[in-house]
Image (cartoon, rainbow, N blue to C red; front, side):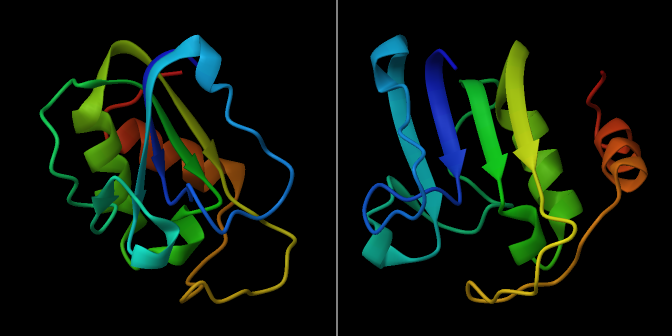
Length: 124
């Protein structure tokens, strides 16, 4: 993770887990969230982020796609924002109980994730 990082669904406050963002390697680390209590840089839906095309070097969609009602739109938005040659890091639970935050809509297999990523413009 380097350059300008956008952590979609991440939290600058009220965090969970042990992940510590490697901010020293980044020029900027920004958060997108719909929960104003997490103090996001962008208080908005993951599918409509008010940033310019190709403006992000590294984009995180970690444990967030199961919480959006239309994850394909979120992935298309990530593709729009990501610089050519940038990195998109995606994770989604599979064998994990349903957990509202505020909602939990789906689980995908790796085949489904790869198909949707390709359909949205990403390559391996």
